[in-house]
Image (cartoon, rainbow, N blue to C red):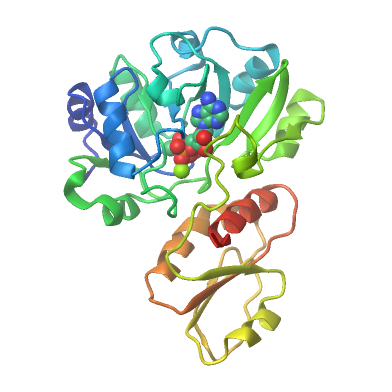
Length: 319
Ligand code: TXA
Ligand code: MG
């Protein structure tokens, strides 16, 4: 049920149940991070493979030592600047965090989300929340309570409604190897922003199945059910689909074509923040129209444009 009742959410969580909650990035499917029963339910409901570890959400930077043994200086600097916010840090895990959450790894992914409802909830309970995005494994992430309801219906007793997510794409994940920061997942905070805070360039290991340190960065992800393609020249690409029912996902410039059933423009002003915020909602809308094909336009490869391209590439990856 979609509700704003935090107390109801608290009761479900205290009884090893699952809820959906809003974060500034996407909606999460949350359970008590100290409860193996809740954690197993998350994997089951999402149909998520056990080798793909979960993120733990804590209420404040001061809680980090409840789940991690140490925090490298650079991680602390980033956390101080960016928490609460869409940054996830991969740190060495501490005992109460089970191997189920971390998929057997010695590290745990942690963040402090900034959505006021979820922060409020975290302050009212005495355990952290583990929460992957609230979508079946591999599908488009939810950015509204309605998206979550469309996926799980009444299987979730509580879907906390916090409106449309402000950022619209997942948190940026940073890990540390030999004390050097590594970008594991492109997200809402750009690589450039991280580098500016650190004062150094960082390397990236986001290329999917290749890296054992980021088992969840699977190449096909965030995927609509409709056949979807990514191109830097939509008008040209359209020529391959004469007579088909087409939906297009564009950055800022409308186009004319008789077979286009629905055109989604992510930001008429060319504002990348606005485009990121609209991305998944537009994908959900297009995917519900029973189109023959969705054609998405590549974004300029800088700042949040890189994150949006990363999501679109995974959404259009053919298996
Ligand atoms: O914005 C977000 O981070 C959202 C909201 C709900 O907080 N959560 C989210 O969770 O995107 P999920 O489960 O969809 O993605 C978690 C990612 C996975 O790709 C997983 O592989 C990675 O985090 N991850 C978790 N623990 C890790 C670890 N110890 N080392 C490397 N990657 C890890
Ligand atoms: Mg996800």
